Image (cartoon, rainbow, N blue to C red):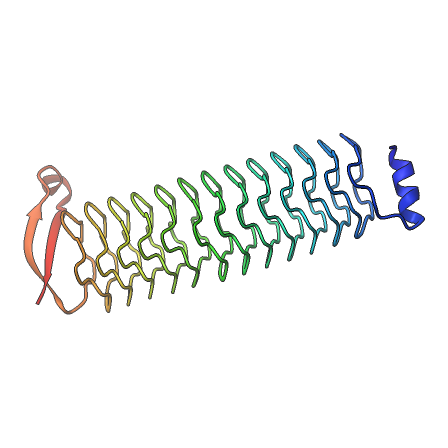
Length: 301
């Protein structure tokens, strides 16, 4: 079908275009509200700045498509294939993207507030400054993603995988990341106040200068994590593993460190709870001479 025929049929009131094949065509700025493009072949199509509000693109193939600044609020994109597509600046509030394929896609500055992306694959996607507040992100694959300055407050992050991702300066307040895999991720300067990170894999995570006030870190594995300069006031670290972690200049006033493993943890210049007394000071064999650094071990008084 040619573009002219499609637009003419739309103007005549037709909304059913299921399975249509329009590879590589230019539909930029087109008005196609509430149309059915389910299972359509739209590889490489240009839908930049198009209006597709409440449209159905479920199971459509949109690899390498340009959907920059598209209007797709309340759209149905369940199981859509958007691999390597450009969705920068897209407006997709309350859109349905369950099990969508978005690996390598560009979603920078996109608005996905209240969207449902449960089970979606976003491996390697660019989500710089994306708005995912109150979104359902259950089981999403965020491995190797760029989530710098992303807004995730209030989102459902149950069972996500976020291995080796960049969340520096992200807003992750009061979210549930319990039992998630966040190993090797970068949360430097991120805001995680009130978040639930209990039993989470946080090995080698970078939390430098992050805000972790009132965070639940019960049983979390923070082996080798960088928490230098982090704010951990009133945090619950009961049973957490901080072996070989760096807490230099960290603020831990009011934190609960009951049964916390602090073996070989660097706590130089950190502010600790009043209930903890220093009992062993172990100078680092090679750093002491050059930098004057020390390892500490603590116990409750």
